[in-house]
Image (tube, rainbow, N blue to C red; front, top):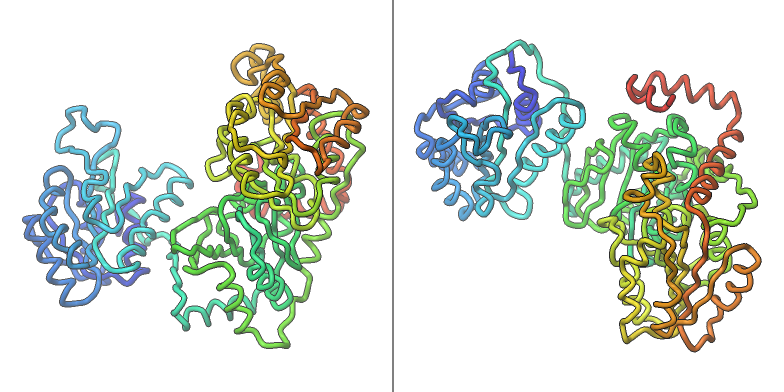
Length: 582
């Protein structure tokens, strides 16, 4: 029987998955859940060394002779400190030790708790990886713990070998051993460029898959090599390619999923589109497909392409990390496929039809209307910067012309710096450089207009709806008092500051005035940069977006709706279903 402590269950199960058998155990109370579990399991070879300093050196020698990782385990407090000398030696000799330090309730640190010191990161400068496990109370904790243990084990031999540290806190001194079998765990596999056998197995998996979904994260540049490789991959494998503007992807098989996969557009539709494999590359993804995939985690494999080999489990379903550039991955898979291999188009067509079923009304005057009109007329080869939240959302409603490069600071997703970022980029190009920015984001970064190097190619569209409309959109606005501290409602204009800094200033309050202003705004021959401020009301702006989603829901056929509902009931847990019904 195994311990009831879930964190140790995960560790033991993953030790087996990684075929790590040799454990050096030092007597103590806090590590009894681990010690008794493994000493009863014939898979492991256990060695008893009472003194922790000696135990760590013993493990070092054992690992050197076996040429494989060895675990050391101890109780809390100074017991862990006694590992220090051998860990330093292991670090400088590249010996792969797994240091398991049992710990007490984190909430009692520095509260005169018995036998407790700060063990988090205590070996940081002399280990390849250091993780502090969560106390597992729910599924999120479980997934997080599993990821951290995988990360530590994968670090043992990543770009050299060396020790790793796993700290295991626990609320109570648990001596219950009522678990007959270990849980199913996911062993994450890292595949480097030269591991041909693993690539071959991955290719065979792809070849046999009926539904491959490629999610393209943020990328700052157009990459013709990647676009060509993706196009070829699309023709050879049963895949669909999900993009958003910040992906800067222009290839065959690309589907812009920002609207159709927004959870407010149709919260249960993704049940019809669950893939066999998700392949991700690039940086952050801002749109709803990330949330949809998380809802259905564990129902598919996630392969992450990471040039640095980092563990990025964006969808809580990670199974493989390919340490290479995205273009290298797709080119390699393409060369392994023969000329007769073709995409049957079934999955692509299903997702493409759904995305193309989005209906666009004649929007009333609003931020949405203004952005739509600008994007439809934005010249090819322009640069587009989007500020945050609403600006990004609305821009992704509408299709861009070819070769418009798109940017947004979604790495951190903060309100600050979007204006400064656009100005920095505009200085280094002669193409028209557009920024779509809300009022709060502009006033936050307004001092950037004083930068002396601004040329005549900057075009700023400011959506002034008198506050943070995002809080109307997401339901944070509760009553008029919310306008004080949440939406920060105001009646400020940008006009004076813009003119002071020698921009051409334009404004619009309705469709007619916007149409006239837009003609000037898009003039490439302007001697000065241009600032266009449009005025709307944030509640109305929010309502227009919600009405857009609501209108589109009625276009989903009833039979499809019922089929989706039936599928959902067999897949999603009951708490999620209740949230969807709300």
